[in-house]
Image (cartoon, rainbow, N blue to C red; front, side, top):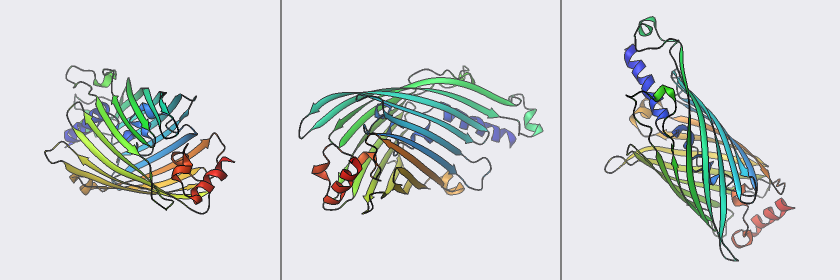
Length: 343
């Protein structure tokens, strides 16, 4: 039994290192640059700071827990920057890391009806992985394949991407794990090669006719070098209120594993949140549809955010709704909110 537990610990560590950090990139609904560095500084008028705390399998010792802190914003009119740090714990396996991204935007078209840009991005990541053997039983510690104490290793990698914007639509492509494995914990001859992940995404922003309700649908398809893939469908909505300092938002998402012939559902996600002045608070709940999630429960995620806007915006309208051509899409109520925010 102890050996089985040890094998599971090592398997979790291998999966975390030999694939993109899915416990990080799953937050892309809130920070798109987590899967595509070209999206760093996506909104030119604001700097945003977001924090995420995710907890799975309540009541299970050493259950997966992840904390992420990210920052992104424009450095110049054409340059965008994004930085995030994370801390992940899953049983006896732990990992900490930091990634810095830089994007450069090229203007393609700009006239009264159309604005189109193409952005390129590059990111570099450093990580430290560790496996703690100190709390294993004496019987397991006597196993020759088990190291004493804590085994650690550090590694570096990179990702790149491109993002096309056309008015209020955007489409992007990104590739991760460009560099070969550099973490000494996973460079033995019997260790599998590090594989790349490919991300494709498409989204936009829409306003409900005659209503101050905005929708941001987003489709993401991810394919791993080991030929496993996932499809995500999500919609983020925003509803301003007569109080310009208060807006409500929500997210509904569906995730599907595309490896099998007809695919298999893996999860449903719902999030509710509030923008108040420049603060953002939300709570996410994921209903797992796999066997493991059914046995051990689902997970909750706390989302916290704060924004700094160039025009010292004091209202609750988030950066994604501060448009260049706001007069065409916003109703009188939202126009008034925009006008008040820009004073």
